[in-house]
Amino acid sequence: MSDTTLSSAGLQQDNDPFFFKLLYLVPIIGWLFKDAVHGNSDAKYYFCANFFVGWGLAIAFFGYAAIIIPALCLVALAFTWIIGVCR
Image (cartoon, rainbow, N blue to C red; front, side, top):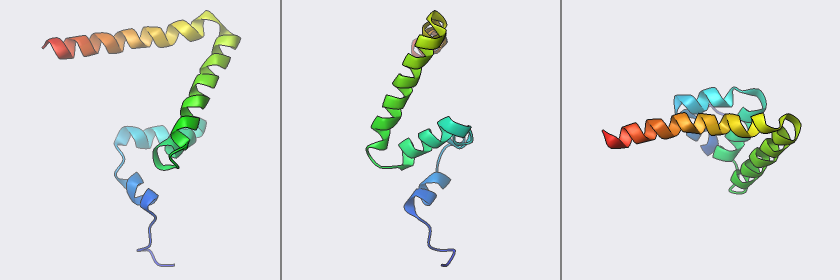
């Protein structure tokens, strides 16, 4: 097998942004995210389903904190978006 035969997924991974490459290094989430980006078309749906099931389990185990912490993070994102739009 020669070095010139690379899969299309390997070529696509070379063009990924730096943030994606860092996200791929996270043990479990990185593997799921990499499969959602470069995998089958169904992998995106499985990633979303896993995300919401995981969030639901976090709410069941940790309660209100699992709901409020993502909401507080979205507040900072919303303020950044508002400032960016109003400039």
